[in-house]
Image (cartoon, rainbow, N blue to C red; front, side, top):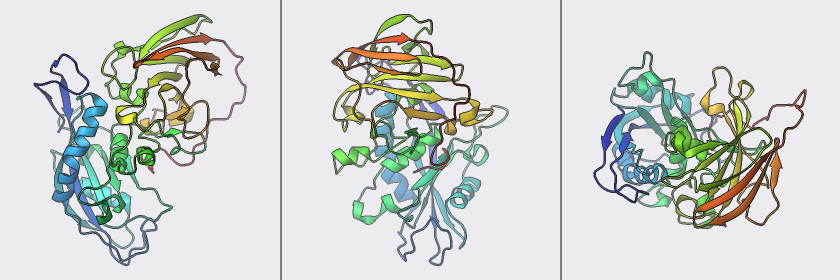
Length: 377
């Protein structure tokens, strides 16, 4: 179940060592064995089957993935991995059946389930998928994965012996992001082409550091959605034609004004944040300002909004979007807003934003994405 407790010592990113409330999820690990004569189209046509043990996999993930989330959340989130069991899939069963059957058999102490197949996926197939679940009604505590259907599934590729004693963690971290309700991000052409977000290209750090096993950081909108950036550290610029200057801290930092919102409609806005080339974003070639269109309209995610179908669309430049907006460059303009960077210094930026109302487009086409948001990688 989700437990709340306070860590006694200094947490990542805290200068004063003040104890904070930490959310701990228990994630139960299950292994699904895939038959050699499987007809499920997602699996590689190969006789390779890994000898995966749920207790071993849970042990491999527990400390490294918990530490990655502790860095991302500044100690506010600490998932714990425990062993579930082993399931044998039928010849026609794939990832959905693997996860669903594991959830059905999971203990009531499991907040989420991570199901791992012992067969690798085809090279052209997604690596896995994740679901935030529907919660429990009425608001029951605990809310087990067997009821909420919260969980994630991955194939065997990141657990191949070629990785050595520890697997690659980035795909699991990506899929667990979905269990927190985080959607993909990127361009209208692909939700996997942004190096700025674990929820897009989770392998981006490996392109700069070949030995890296973990994913990079995430966008400020996800940190805010998780409560890791509180509302007091978010400001919304006025949409009245005025010019306003703001001093913002890096969105991955522990405190301060970290996220600037430029409203478009009641359920659409632009997020403006400073990403610095350090910590989980150390693979970025430079620090700078990132702008993202956040679309939670009915056209994007339905009514009520399915959080995994929200659109987080990178603005400006081209994939992988690492050419961030710099001081001294020309301003960025779009959606009736103008953003100019006045300075970036030591994890702090000053930006000037101007609202310039534009006439509405009568028949604008909604952004089309390559795949549904609840199917991952």
